[in-house]
Length: 84
Length: 219
Image 1: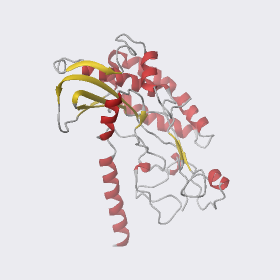
Image 2: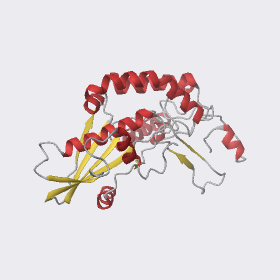
Image 3: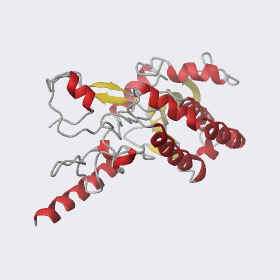
């Protein structure tokens, strides 16, 4: 929580980035502008997956990290089921 | 492997294998602020407390009016995003996505605000976030050299709901800090401070405070 200490000592109320950028390769139907399918595979490509916060189509309430862990677990399952 | 929209790839001399125009669009980030309060108590170690608030918690009796305003603005919000994307995003698609977004806030009433209290030495920090911004930014390459950083435009406060959300959350921070539960240990407001944001401050004054120093806000 280092960043909070910094903000406190400078007494800054100002806005900053939350560095929780999402949705730039969203898991959605392709006709809605989606980039990956429900197995995290990029549309139009055989074997490229995106496994990070960019696949989340809408912001989550709270911190992203737990959701990203869950996505990574799902990706691992999808890859294993394809090859093993 | 390059993923981004065709025109940008072409511009940088990259051979396009699959055209996925939405790549790099639709970027969403939450707006962040932090209030600071003096305290008569020294807290050591890490003891953060977090709370989540839905639209009714934040706007109370004003929720109905806000609901109507936002609902009536959805088509314009979609148009603004379509225009900002240079027409890459389809109007009907954006309207559909914003209807889902609107339902999350006003029908399902999932949290729109997060407040994190971090007690410290003679001070307490109240970090806060507006969680569900409508604004949409983008991230795109600036070069075919992968060591050149991408251009990131978070487009904060592009759409007016987002500013209302952030102001509502900032006001909730002040209310929380002045609540009965905390009045024995919170002794004063350091930031934003009553000089820059008086108790009866208008939303214009609050807006200035929550946007102060914002480098990436929409113009």
